[in-house]
Image 1 (cartoon, one colour):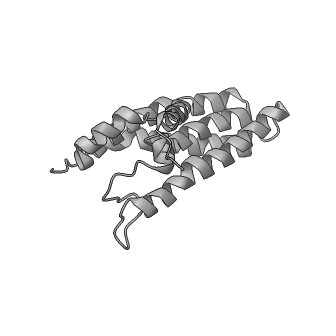
Image 2 (image 1 turned 135 degrees about the vertical axis):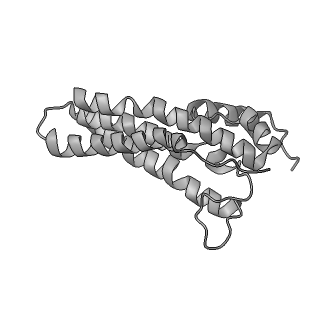
Length: 176
């Protein structure tokens, strides 16, 4: 398979996501730090930052390094084998899920209309980039990735957990 060359348009969504996310943090931290907020929502926001960063942001690095056959000296994203275990058995693009959850965490933490304007577009822009990531993975892994797409949701981790539990429940148990 020949890899298509990327155009500048491929980088527009991720560039805007990055700028919006950074703006959300800067505005929330430096300009809105004295704005009153509902404390429990702020705590949930902080928890969501930490949880999603570790679970959806960190676990993929470990899983790709363990199972993706990354060549020595290469970044973990340069897998040579499709990874469909661990976090990748729940959702196809966990690190993109991190950005969507961080946008929501920012809304909960900073609780201001400016943060909403900055945070809400992150979700659809990230999803646009997810579609491109699936196309790239189909180019790289072909039919194996197409089959994977049928079994594991793109970004809906709640559905992914349900499907994984159903699959495990329906597997025949080994005789003792």
